[in-house]
Image (cartoon, rainbow, N blue to C red; front, side, top):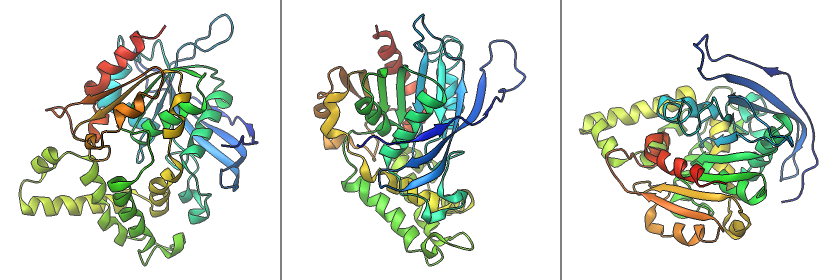
Length: 357
């Protein structure tokens, strides 16, 4: 990808305490980094690109000024950086003695381009917002980390789902920047087959909604949300869905609730961009560029990254220091959403960090 010529500046940082907590509690800060005239790979330019982030802890530097304790965590398609603050993740990762103990680590949680507090179509441009891909998202994340936060080295890049896919890209594009990579619930190959079919079902439902009007809708379109339960169908486990909806009536009610929640909480344009932004994703040809220690973790009951494809062992073998773990289906796995259960994959994170020099 061509080097992007960007002029950027750091917006005022807003420090927000987590709460008036006792000593030893997580130190949480939020801020916005603004990039001027951000050029997308399509050639489109956004005069101001706002990148929102949350951090835990403080950076530490060695005698040469190199940051020694920074870790970057990248969220999934429908999430934000604060997704990692949910109890099933933060409760297993950031506390005293835990693998990413925030009293010893500088934890960076960005909102990806197009999501959360970062610039996105629903801020006003709607469908005139530049068409972005994962490469653009990673470029923006890199600017935030290196220029916005002044971090010149990462101990770890960890990502879940879409964030896992972007973790592969980080390893390829900036091979000397990090020590370790932990992509979770992802595959380092372009999205195709069933994975693309279900995404197209959702995005075409938006484009074909009569009230979408090319993205310039006076009121939020609603018909497309009747297709949104396909997201739950693909990301959850059949066992959990059966337990949540064991009868025909309960299953129909669950469908209605999922569609109603989508209508209430999601913007059609933002959602369209989310699911189409993987158009440029294909790290497979450059896997050999990855120099960091890498452990890729997938789940056997994940429909989005099906183990039946048999691609992971072969692809991970192309990375000089990589290995692949397939977590078997069990009482603690819930399909693709097992990524939200750090207790399941935390042992591999601990193993990865212990193996670093």
